[in-house]
Image 1 (tube, rainbow, N blue to C red):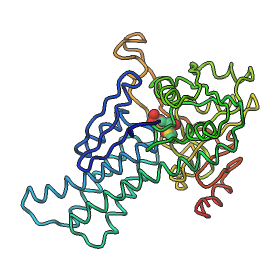
Image 2 (image 1 turned 135 degrees about the vertical axis):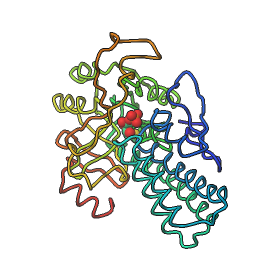
Image 3 (image 1 turned 180 degrees about the vertical axis):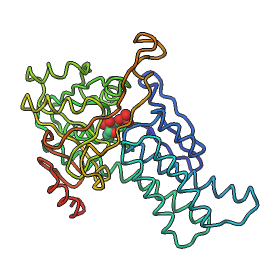
Image 4 (image 1 turned 120 degrees about the horizontal axis):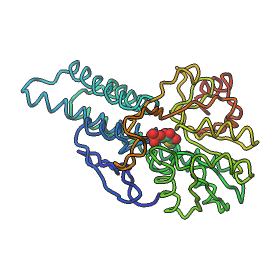
Length: 358
Ligand code: MRU
């Protein structure tokens, strides 16, 4: 996506493009405290696993600043121990906002480790170095996405029609995107590409965000309803499916937006390759298999209402798991910044991670 980033750090505040109102309105919200960022993550103003991690990195800088200022406010001397205790608390409350995406806890922990490693513990130095670390997380994410794009584009041939689900693009990352990064790289290489974007009920990341992003890039896109994917796969309209990931377990199982598993089963049935674009930071070797991944259950209003208009009978019960788990045996390959893992399984994941991805 060209133009200004949807995540903007202004030194003393974080500006986030409000994704709830895209594509009609491009409004930015200002976050002055880590609690503001927390609200933005919980309410999907910023969403997508890597983007949530990037926002959390800056939220930790805002939390650190707030804690340091509270020492000044109370006229008490800076205590390293108190600072660290309060920073861990702030990190924990951030982590709890959206439990499935591992990038959130990964970024919070990286910021905590950074703060512990700072030798000169003067508050000014602490803030400076934490701010630099948050900026590094942002910059590295774009680099990682471009490398995923390069690797992934080798799997995309001229005249391919690609099905994608949810939004794993610039809006879900610091910029460029993972699954959409692969599509963009192939397109920029001059390949003729068409994208089918699942609308992705209930938050409509596909029809609102993926279509918006691809249209801006000039990449041909058709929006389809989620239920039409099987029809198009069976008809032979689709050459491959590419999705993003919120967490990858040690055996290669992938947690991603609800509906991903359905697509993987349909892909297998119709002999269509199914790829997940996965930054190394999304792999969680502490989780043995997908069944252990906590799946976030979101508010029923996302299903029962659309922009305040009721879609279901009043009081009807709904279930709204936001993610599902795709077992690794349904995945043709994981595309990472270090290369492609074909037919992922526990052994291959272990070998890959032991080599540091490289
Ligand atoms: O609920 P969301 O919109 O945060 O879910 C996003 C997804 O499921 C993405 O596919 C995933 O986070 C990868 S984004 C690069």
